[in-house]
Length: 301
Image 1: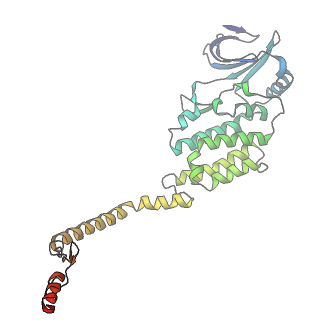
Image 2 (image 1 turned 120 degrees about the horizontal axis):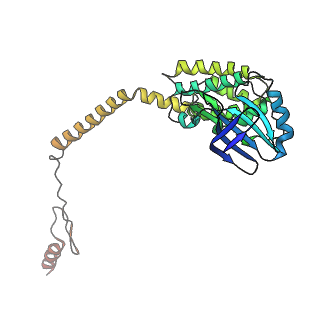
Image 3 (image 1 turned 45 degrees about the vertical axis):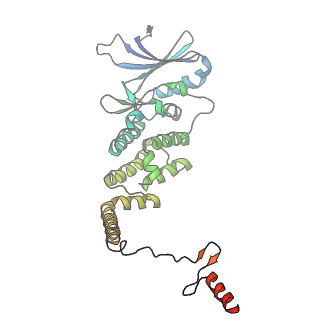
């Protein structure tokens, strides 16, 4: 499929999404000698026009937003064109990545927020897990799929903070759970409360403190939760604990064997005296009751 504009002839390579209100395509410009990849958002309904057109006219004056190429309208359909690079979703890579790699992902993401300096509405729309890519050359890029864009109420900076907070939670779930860091919970709490940061640059500076702290600790992370501290001590001293337990078990086994060898044979079962046969009672050193009765009868006669 070809889409022609005044400046470009776009060849659609891949359909990313198609709904009644929006279509998102990966495409190239066949007029370019060295063809780059682009992401084209096609808004099929005019419900967003009143918000999007002024917003992106303003963005065209933002020279920092280099990922944005242009917007145009043809036959009542609004088109927004962005740069695009192939890659896999960031959090697929982050699941198996080391702490050092995940720290670097977060740094590149935050740096890109500063460099692109997007309007809050656009930044919120693409600061979502499905819109974050790790490209083939190992960089973090935004996928500008604006299907999540909403005009119910234009976002403010605190909305960006909340979206950024969710990204941090997905990047560092174990570190948050185990409380390995002082800076991470402080940063998350500040993002949750709002009012501490005012710009992307402020977020970048705050992330830089977290980055430095965890980078220094990555080889000897210690949890600040009591139960995890106890577990860490047990793991650290496990060789000593194991040796002590082996000695105790060995000593107990030796004592048991000695007892079996020297004491169990000397104890014999004591014979139990017979004290009664039927109805006759046998008393020690005394004649049977029947004999006593017979002699007494003879004397009386």
